[in-house]
Each structure stands twice: as structure tokens, then as C-alpha cells.
Length: 113
Image (cartoon, rainbow, N blue to C red):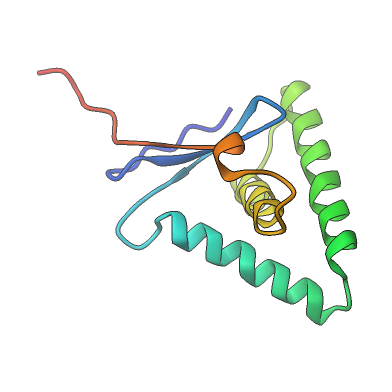
């Protein structure tokens, strides 16, 4: 499991009711930032002649691989987990899944004084 702490909280991504990654939020990296990454990924897919169906299949397959690695307690690079978040948000953009079903925005954890 990757835990990233940020002064603005995190965007926690789930897939098939399993925690995947907490993407750190900041003034420059908010939900819109990660959504724009997914839109850019979608755009690049269309530029490479991948239609919506093939892109959705690829994102779902990628998530299946990531979930298997998590379930097997394998080490996963943070960049790969960010890409998993982007893949999930791309599936949201294509209306294959609902954002509320796969994400949770958590505020910064307050420390006790």
C-alpha cells in the first residue's frame, strides 16, 4: 500500500472495493489536475487510433494487473499507481463507472496537540 501525505489531503482511488492509491492533493494538484491527466491520456489514445472501446478495455486490463500486484503484495512504482488513478478517471470520463464509486477525497489528517 502506498500512503502519500500532503498538506491538502489526498484523492484515494479504489478498484473493485480495494484501495489502490492515495494521490496527494495540493494547490496545483487537485482533482481537476488528475482528471486533466486522464483526459490527456484519452486524447493520446484517440490520436493513436484507439477507439473508446479499446481504450476502456486497456484501462480495465491495466487495473486488473495492478490489483493482482497489490493482492500479491508486490512492489509497485508510485508512477504506475498514478497511472492506475488516471485509468480509473478515464473510465469515469467514458461513463463506465461513477466517480463516487471509485474515489474519496480526504482532508489533511489533523494532528493531536
